[in-house]
Length: 129
Image (tube, rainbow, N blue to C red; front, top):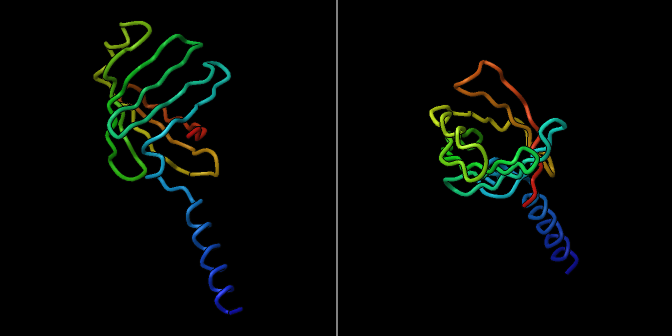
């Protein structure tokens, strides 16, 4: 009986710890938040093929096509300006490339590059849902 209880507890703890570890695939769909002192918060809602970004401080809401090139890397291309300056669509030929570098308990770190700049940036993204 004691052995059965011990095995049950060990299995339960193992399954619990496995279930809590986030992977890049667990970030493919969900709601996230990027904070910036200069730009304010940006809310990111991601589905299988679409990413919507909204920044109230800057007054825009954009839809991007998302293409996962590996479990931890994806590319964004501007699909639609839902709210904000329509001239942003002129930049629709540009592609943003994002690599998930590290996953933390409640956030993840990205490395970002693009076809319109040589600059590589890094951001911490909060996992909302």
